[in-house]
Length: 463
Image (cartoon, rainbow, N blue to C red; front, top):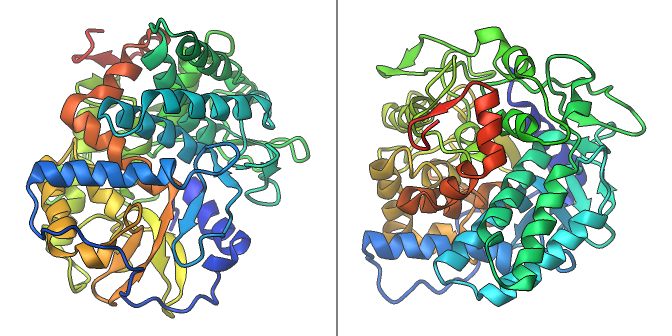
């Protein structure tokens, strides 16, 4: 079975590079670190929404990497020192967006945010770059690349795209400020994004490639093709004022000459698009999250698909899958659902990592899957949040919100967090509430131009 490329590497790399994720882990039965549950045990929906957004923000605010103030790759409450200096490039992009939401909601002081983000962007300016792209992991102390694999010791264009999505939102949020420090922050974000040499990563072909290494060149030879989490990479590449790609690169590359389309359905719900490696069903939920923290899928179409339908139907099918529960896992239901890439329970009870999806269902629920689907399935996602915060607070909620993964069937959880899982939670909830980040990103002039160049139309934004 072919899983998403990024997370195939994560499965291996996390296991090899993080001793705390190795096959020697002991199984963790449901006994999380002591977190005082709030006095009441039943909350209104608005209270739960406020709580989960504040909780998710803590990952990027209270548990940020100490020097760069960017997102740590992981935080383990059972081993807080694990990989404390490993910065997640993509997760940091999600973190930038999470912090903007926190400013909007009054949960962090604006002046302190500007200081911290200035530190972060200065760090990114001085960190290793590879034809403008950052690596998957960065040493938060030195700014040097931390190899994600033997040949993956250079630029990672997809992780860079997730970071740039956040940088553009930062630019747009502060660009009209009269405060010199805020205006400088906006300009810094603009300079950083414009330095990415997107067209270098085509090798002169009509497709983008995921990796380039100064030691191994393009030997990884991994094409970026959909439908998966990577559409934002092509949109940013088309939007670049200095290193743009042609429409044909998108058509033949990400859209695979139209083979991205499908007439298949699940539970009577059209798939709309072929999910990479999913064999006629849906892939993990992050396919419809990572690129869409800034990219608004509502009414967004190109010659191949309606992305509002594709993302919404993805989440609805995932919810229906939990209700159907073909593998008969204890605990799956209309209110306990959601499969995506996250920490996982290995067959021997140790902690590993897996891209959970219907064709790879291990009985493990990843909270970010349902929560970050809030704009697509508001009723179903709210049912899930009630399940977490009203019914199972003491079990599944920790110091930075819902733990990364758990299994009711095996009475198992991992009291750990990953940046790329916590990162979509608050931004996607906010997009459901106010379209805040969607409006910032989609109204950016260069993004509009890039979308139009690739043949996109948006009923929400009038092009």
